[in-house]
Image (cartoon, rainbow, N blue to C red; front, top):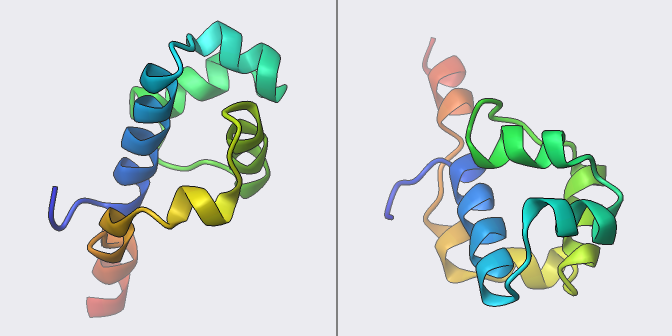
Length: 89
């Protein structure tokens, strides 16, 4: 997972937390207030962006907060690939 895109890693982390807690996308919708379609589009990578507000609600639904979520060591290795592409132009 080294050099994984930051956005992809967020999706992986959400999926891991959902699996650990045996939570479906539909249950996460009920717990977070974020539409299941929004969650599914992000987790299946049909969209590469997630609003910070939605991530906050998802974290709350999963019983964590943003600082705990991003404390995962893998985020130190993640890259914002889209940003680095723009920067190199």
